[in-house]
Length: 407
Image (tube, rainbow, N blue to C red; front, top):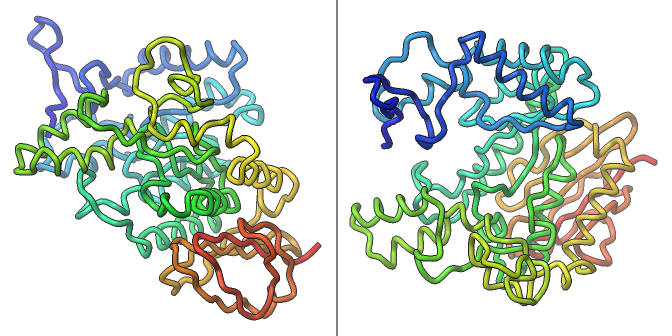
């Protein structure tokens, strides 16, 4: 475990850094520090910026006296402290909250809880617009450990989505919905048989959050179905976390091949490769030397080729539906098919309209019984053609299907 303290020059004193030594934690209890931070936000606000993402913002509420924590039990000492909410309300009041309706703010929340994310995002509390959480992206960790190889746990994933969706809906909280970001390997490689069903899997994953309650995010390359780069050597990686993890895995007794296989699957560099624009050198990203090698898939998977393909055009349809239908943008969330071991399903409701969304998370087709009310509905969107609503439907490999009730 990394030591979160580093010497402060030759003063004999030390400073706290929960992450890299170049990222010193700031003392939010100091009013002068808060004033400076508010000025930073206002600088960009005055430049015209109308959206702010606050990194690991729920870790800013340190105790007055910093004491040692038991090994592997440190996070409760600095995560989601009540005073964080006080700081966020101050930040809101002194910066973007002066014209809150014009701004979008999102907090990245590390190891957070539903209860706190409701508080962070309930509009009348004037803290943030929405919150990211990462629990659903740990369902392929063995015993909670990232640097392991394990198939994803569908039951855990489904239950997390249902619990968060239901609670945030019932208590007026708001989630930032996502599958990919700069700290995660590509979701397609984690949840889908990409060799056989890349298009179907990519569109199913997209619908599972874009039709849900919250604000969906699209990460660079997700909209064309980009994959992990499939590097050949540790020399291809730049991420310090991955390099350190490789050494630790070797020290733990893994062979070089075993350790490398884990890095290939879990490295943050999987999502940090250059955007794949076309088939030219470096995927058309640069004529120079990129910070990371481009992924091996770029001759087949690139914007030029995918711009009219099934994944990109499906994303366009999902975005259009959210803009056109208040039901998709604002409706409530209710779990459905909770006992299914293969289908993640939910209902949305707004006024006299309802939507049932079915997502098959596996390559195996499955027959589902459609609730009687929805048997009279119409297909709003599907990633398979020629779907007709009936008493029973066979969902194909990685099929997503949304059935609309009401006009």
